[in-house]
Amino acid sequence: MTDTLFASNLRDDTLLDIGAQLRRCNVQLEAVPAAKECMRNFSTFFDAVTRDKVTSGHLLGASIPDEQYFAEMPYPEMLELPDALKDQQFLRWLDANDDESLESALRYIDQINETISEPRFAWVAFIYESQHLPTPDGTGALGRFFVYVPRKDFDQHIQFGLQHDPARVLPKGVSVVAVQKTDAGTGEALRRPRARLKDFWRKRDGGRIEISTRWKETGLAENCYACHKQATLPITPHPLKFDQERFGERLKSINKRMASYGAIDLDGFTRSAYGPPMGPRTSPLRTPAFLAACSAGQVKPERLARLGDAMQCATCHDGDRRGELNYPSGIRMQPKGGTLMSWYVVNHQTMPWGVTDLSLVERQALVTCLNAEYYQGHGDQPGLLESWLLQEACW
Image 1: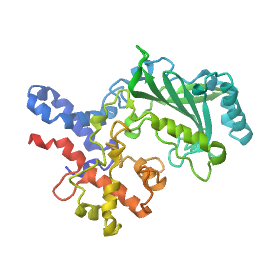
Image 2: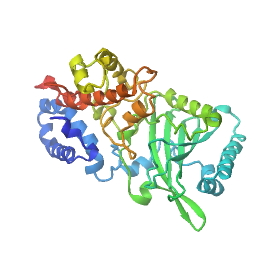
Image 3: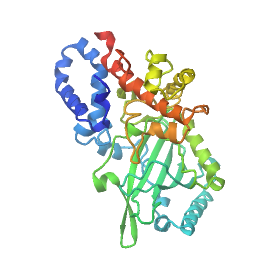
Image 4: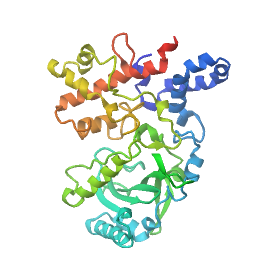
């Protein structure tokens, strides 16, 4: 096995073929417990990463069928838009998307807050433009009207798409990440928060704007965990188009709140099925020879040790502080090019957290070396993912 197997994202025919073959072999594996155990990583991985392509009714990639995922909530209103955000005037202000209308939309949120007695439940709203992620509705919209709605049992992070380009059609997408904080049966705090995601759909007809869902209107959905290794991703606005003076503190408070959750479990997904974490604290591959090879002469010899130190993503992304970065991190392409890893490490330069002494070239090499360590290996040594899949102790 080589990195070629993982070269073309989740849609690679080889991945699907292997996943289908393993499903056909499951009966035989049940009869040979030792073989089943030695195939455990291999089987669970291919079952997880191909489920959305080969299992009917599982477009989200979750073990829960899509219909059940959206219908059966720990809290019924957890993945529903608050009624106040379905207000027709509010939705029309967002469609108008001019300064006066957006000011009116922000004042509307302020008015809602005047009715909330406890400050910890106050809503937070701001406007920004994404650097790399258009809305998932095909309109290419990069603008966002973000609303944070905290509640006792769950928080909602809601993003209405705003059209950044007046020549394009109005965006339909409204995305919600709901983070469950308490057990619905006992009311006690969860040891680890849980999350579900949902894309709503704005339907415009005769002056009215109705709220439906993307899944209902288009039949489309994607594997949530493929991108959301951490359910709430840090917001990194376009720096030249963000009102830092007005919204900077709000943005900071929201990113701090997102970080405070720690690692978040996504309902219907087993994180460990997607492989080991990228960038472990130590790795048998991370030798001077490997670092020199993966950086391809772009990093000075005296800086190779620093490059290796910076590869320890799992110091934070350890499954407790943050979700692990496993398959397909580093190779799943974003709509505007690049991967989430390359955007955060190279473009935003916000990761690795607190690291400020890497040059642009070194950051580019860091992404390349992390991918090489995980997917390719070096010399006779397989990459970390392949080694995990093979469970070498069995052979």
